[in-house]
Length: 412
Image 1 (cartoon, helix red, strand yellow):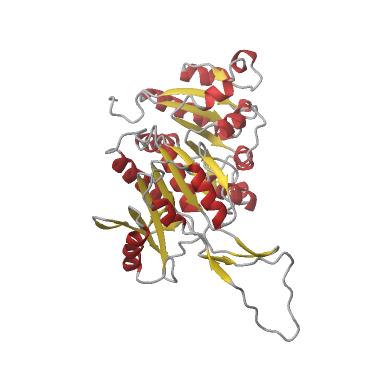
Image 2: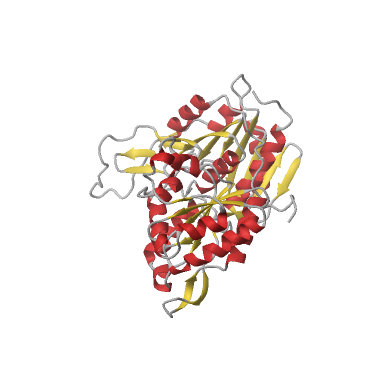
């Protein structure tokens, strides 16, 4: 153990939920403290059926928290302090029940309340019966948690306590320890403290009539990931998002909009900013005169004509010289052909600093609405092509580049 160890001097809040695998949390505490990591424990009521507060306290050297209704702790909003006192929150074992409560945003006890209140990264180590793990409800819950940025380790495949075999077995403590070390070693520096970032995300919906609209396939996933990555580096982030099913990332000021005009107004209200990352797939056109009543099919008429007008060009307007122009303006170019040529031309035409270009055509790998992206960063200096990455990794890399660029200009 040396100070260079990513676990040395770090703080982990360990939530132990119900399940026979809870006994492995004791070994995990021993491994963590042996590497110089401070551990505080929260034990759920169900978890206490398998391990005792005394066991957790003996190994961690810290009092164990079990209830939301402690007069001593809650006199100073203890659940809030706990949720923000650690570098990482680890749920081990993460039962099907606590994962479902996390996905639903419930706050029924101390553990789920602090999970809802935390802006600290969360790592969950699932453990449950194979049928429970494979149930559609659990699969949907896991998709929701992944989309919110919850990190996972396991589960492994093997023999269960119930003598069934399959996925659902808790990962072994050394593997969970490695996952914790990996997350703590890549914790981003707080090099955007004092900076304000404006991010747009998702599609816009341009009404045709009360039930129809013009839209596109953007999920908002890339923009939400960028907002989360900038916030993780300490930035104050305003996320202006079109319609999406994604919840706003923790610690981000979210503004929900529908149309391009609403998005422009929200962006203008959010500046000044140090950086604007305009990820949203804004509709180029809108109906000139949306109908106040549902349009009906006409007997004998097989076509319908719509008069369309151009929407405001948010990227060009925010990039225009003036006192409210962000120090760095990053636009996105979703193209189906001549990707780099179009991206270079767009950067010049919009007078923005950078363009992040991606291929959304048939061969684009399902970028819009998908989990992965392959981008090219186009700047005045040239083009930097990145490999195909998870959208969260694209966001992490872009946030690092933004931080490095802004390091040369003073914070307000």
